[in-house]
Amino acid sequence: MKSRTRARALALQVLYEVDLTDHRPGDVLQQRLEDERTEGQDGLSEDLVEFARQIIFGVYPIAARLDDVIAEYAPEWPFDQIAAIDRNILRMAVWEFAVAEVTPLKVAINEAVELAKTFGSDTAPRFVNGVLGSLADHQHILASLLKKGG
Image (tube, rainbow, N blue to C red; front, side):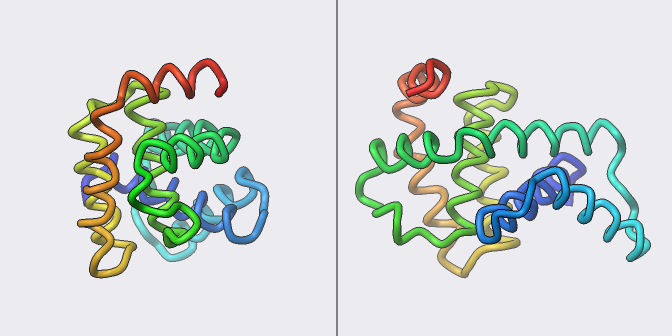
């Protein structure tokens, strides 16, 4: 797995746990980093940990707004029926290309699909690609809505 993809995977794991448990994101991130060290895995560089941290603390405070925008602009997928892992992958991708604008649209979609292949169900990659494809047509509207708070 590429290094930035590993950072995204870390962010996804943290956001997923926080979504399901209401644990504090900073605590979960610290625990994940400690777990990696304990398991003897090659840790992420400080730059990549910071990238993961930016995703986590970029997505977490606006998760409800991200959900609303995704539901509005991809209505063919009822948001309340989306699996938690897929929901967090979608949130991250939209945040990357519409809010932070740190990742080109196509790269954000490709990275989201890769995460869905690794962490989601057999149908998740196609689903994530379809939802993000629908949202891509509204990238500038999404950016405007999310940046001005609503």
